[in-house]
Image (cartoon, rainbow, N blue to C red; front, side):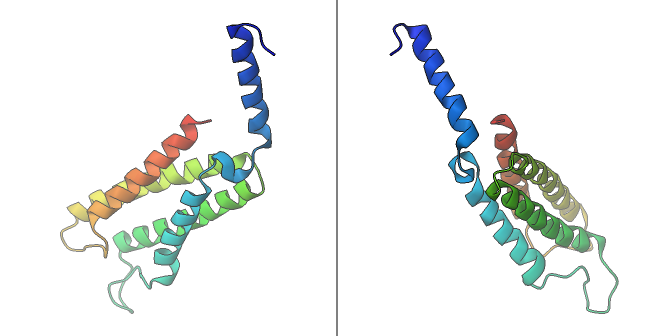
Length: 147
């Protein structure tokens, strides 16, 4: 039993460090957030029927293609991060943070592009793109802050 304040702090810190190495992926990692991101981005990127063209035989529209592939790449990246977390790899959180930062930059850039493009408009509001960018950016900031 610790006898003074310094010993108590040291024993508490040692217990916390020991528990970090043996925790399950769900204990401190945002597994639920990854599942939500995979479901949301995967559904709209792969299953919803969004396309990179205005007409079936029309030319590829860069704004639409960038949006579609941002959704798809984010879903794939978050799925890889989730798989690593479930395998208890320390790279899972790092990959989640990197994918989140890249998707945050992409969503914020797409929002600006959509606001500035007067000839075309995405099927989603630029305000929602900003919210998605802020959500991913904040989650990534938390991942890297907690490291």
